Image (cartoon, rainbow, N blue to C red; front, side, top):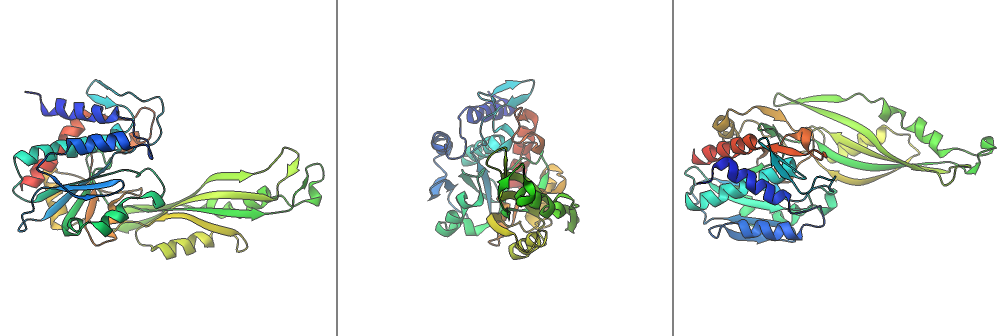
Length: 355
């Protein structure tokens, strides 16, 4: 009989080898749905989000395993490979290893249902894209079952710890104006790049802000990630547009975050909020989260990034991040996940579901 480690490794590699860059997920979408056992019926089939569940036992809480199957673009890391106890390849950590664990779990639970809860499976795409592409709002509008969930476990890379909450993710464009002119006579012009350098000084020197929530330290940071300016080497530019990425802590609302970001820039600057994914409520000490921690003696840490736990907590559903991948390998050329981490994640969840 094939071992659990070999089974999880093979499933992870199988998923890795199906190219699924965001917006190009048709093949893996079909393959993942094909792997869902017959005992798990489709409760919601959306554009790019799919919820499957066995027949409900209403006396038991419902736990949702959630995972995205899309990836960032490849970096010469396809196809994948298994070597020295590690699955290498695009998406192995973020988060096809987690999806493989979820699929193998529900396939096993279809034969041997858990005693402590019902387990649903949510798989979706377009996670590696800006907020406007998120398919989960349509799920929450169209599914009844999802609102019965007592806990959602999003299998993001957490290196086998529980990551509670998440920071918000806001992207904005700030446009600085000047007067164009010949670079040989710059005193007759107003250089928009120079205005941008001066106007972005507060952002460039902004220290990180630490906020303690439920004993966990979240950090608020703002970065200039792009600067677009200039039309020729001998023309002083009259326009410079800076892109800012702002990761704001769970103690701020979206409106408060927008107001604070604007306060960092000169009053006369045009600012456009391009996308905004608010932070998640920090769920650290609910009975189910305590039971999950106990099932694997898991550490509890803050999620210093945005994840789909926010989609759940925004709607009053408890959610945490817990997955086998290590965040330090996410989106890297040498992306990988340890087979032992896949086994640890599977066995912890299986114990949790069994009570």
